[in-house]
Figure 1 (cartoon, rainbow, N blue to C red):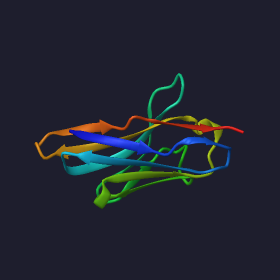
Figure 2: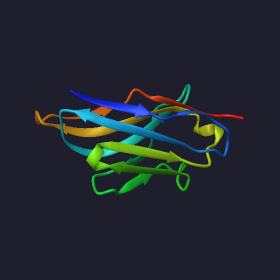
Figure 3: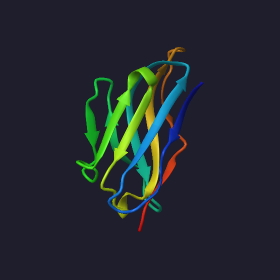
Length: 120
C-alpha cells in the first residue's frame, strides 16, 4: 500500500503565496518523478511542474518564474512553492508520484487534491 498525503492550499489574494506539500508513505522502494497537476472547473487536469530523482525540473510556461517545485528524498516529500499567485491559478492541485514498490510494482499514485483559490 502506498499513500500520498497532501497539505497546504486555501484562499489567498492575488500576488500572494502558498506552499503545497505531499508526503508519500507505505511500501516504497524507489520514487522516480514527482509532480504537481491542477484542474480548474470545466477544464482538463494539466501538469504544473515535475521533478525527477536528480532534481531536474520542468514547468508549464504559465507558472515559470513564479512557482518552484522541490523534493526531499529522505522524507519522500515534494513541495510546490507558489508565489505571485493569479486568479487563473485557482484550481484543485494534485500531487503525483511514479513509485516502484518493494513488491516490484511500478505505478503512478495520486494525492487527494487541495483547493487553491486566488481571489480578492
